[in-house]
Image (tube, rainbow, N blue to C red):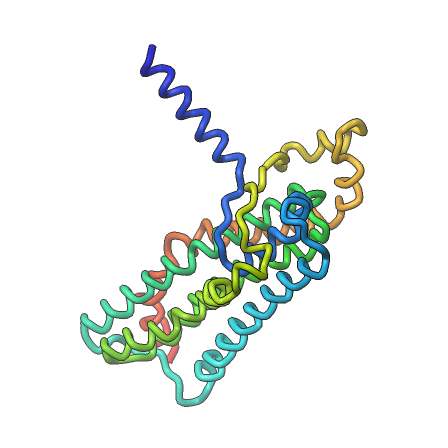
Length: 266
């Protein structure tokens, strides 16, 4: 009987955890939470503070895009060439560094997808659902392109030690949001304070139920955002399919087959 009660309590805890949107302490997560009505009331935030958090996320994304553009300018220059690994140590260094980059970036992409899904299902929880969705999109896309840029650039290096050194520099692109968030003083930023976790109430299967029931509390709010939420859902699903089919499992292996494909094309 005692064992049964323990198992029941454990299942209840798992179900309760699945109903909460766990977010990190990075700049994107803070900007996303700032648009939530409950967080705004809990932290007593005004719209200027919400906009400051959003501008911080755009600032971080701008830096990430700028650094990726710098790498892209090298990749698309005439002197750049993806080469076959000179020996097994070079190939191993490329693959290991790619895996380490993937471990840093994958969490950001997964969190961005979770936030996009949350906005698509519960747009009425946000003062500006479009901006909240864009914050989630920035985190997901920024992490994805940072890893791709790292893979492509490392595929052009022929020395194992140079691969490691260049990886350390490239890995910082994916951590700009963490650097910025940790540099913000906790005293002057309400959004850095702990808040109640966002609760997942609505799923895709509930959309028609909420639309058809005029007595539902969120019926009017969902009706106002019905067109935009389908766009949110489409963008989320496209990225989710790409993430689940290739990025999560196979993206690090790109560093193994990309040089051979490039050599065949040459």
